[in-house]
Image 1: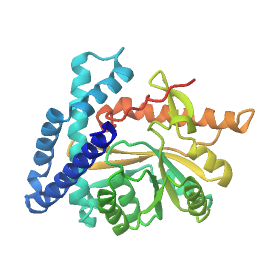
Image 2 (image 1 turned 30 degrees about the vertical axis):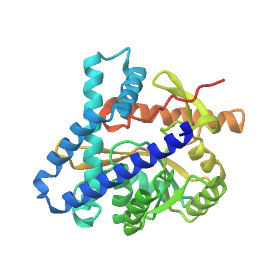
Image 3 (image 1 turned 60 degrees about the vertical axis):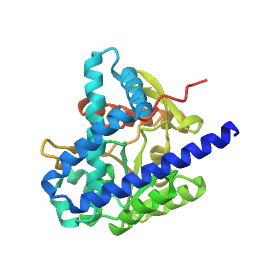
Length: 306
């Protein structure tokens, strides 16, 4: 058997297994009492942490890049374990809370809402800049429940059957999905949405390859998407950093920072780099404050500058 064929089969088996696990967990979540929900999530996290070696290695590598000079090995391992627990809790909440709008609204509070409303009052749309931080799909659902028209730019999942499951949940909350590809469709749809004075959520914390710009992130250059600044330049939309943070009792708080006015450089490209760096600095600040909230299993620094 050719190596490529083996890899294809292996990936298909892995995706099928993950899909089966997702369906099984969603069925269990429907029948277990609410008070056991987070204990169940902790059990899933412990199982995943013990079995998923590749993701655990990536988490250790990422944490070592970010905190290797600041934290001990023990502290890094603890953040990795906590991040697995938070990811499991988020997954369980998506299955549980997304089917209970009134409970979802009750368990998520908003802080700095006046910053959002002031940005919207400009009439040019609002770009919500964030990261794969906390249970961000709940952020979009909560804003929709609050009466805002909200869209999110997202990469389509490799497993299209799982993608359909989550797409259905987003549609239930009237959250519009703008897929990152095809690029021209993404750009046209985003500009149209902003010109309708709506919200567009854009996470810029994942490796963006050669299409992005390299900015400092935890002291190391990271390829970063330029979308928020490019769209702001074209539409005059406000840029508003926002984050959803898990509380000790597993409720959530959405924090809206003040709108970020663009700092102009000597050229359009310099303006992009300056402001993407400023946004990345804000994301890093939140990750430093709440390190377990971020997805360390992503190879953020994979692409390197020439």
